[in-house]
Length: 214
Ligand SMILES: C[S@@+](CC[C@H](N)C(=O)[O-])C[C@H]1O[C@@H](n2cnc3c(N)ncnc32)[C@H](O)[C@@H]1O
Image (cartoon, rainbow, N blue to C red; front, side, top):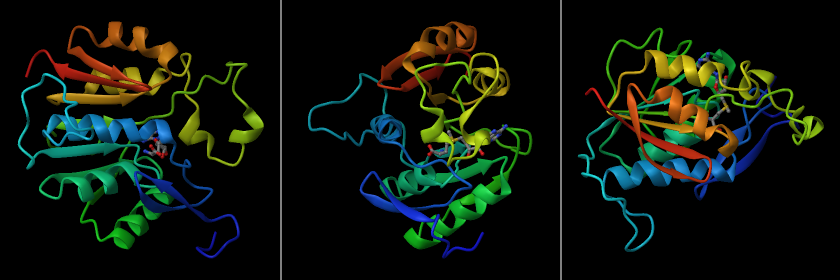
């Protein structure tokens, strides 16, 4: 579809506007807490006096945003932590094109990789952030009609919504792994990850894990 289509619009995320087309998820407010979690890791407190009791990472970290969609997470992190190297991946070529446009619009130098999870990623990032699809098609509290304007690829996953998140945990190797999932899934995810990653904190929909092996 063309960039000028009526279906395209702009959505605010963390105080910046992002182009959103039918090929990408509309950025959600709950995902903004993922940004706060990363800022916390580099000692850039988002609220005065609020900081997790964690060793502060240097700002020159490498951050991989998996399933970047509109690029809202990757672009925001690059704008908030300019010293960081930010790489954005998605399995959808159409989504990556939208993310690239948003990166250009904000002047955020980001690298893009088309990849299923980490398949085409040949380096070890310090931090992986991932808002992968986690909606279970069986959840009866979800308004399917409201979601019908966004790609199924961005929303739904098998295994009660956890297939891709579990697959990522299986293959991930990073100091920190920061995931978004519905709070009702947090316990199962934490247990699944427990041989590789320890839970540092949860905030809203966000889980922050630290590697137990690196
Ligand atoms: C929930 S959306 C998140 C989009 C954006 N990061 C955000 O927070 O608004 C999930 C994204 O994951 C991508 N995705 C789905 N399956 C994937 C896979 N196997 N590997 C990588 N990305 C995938 C989708 O194309 C979609 O852009």
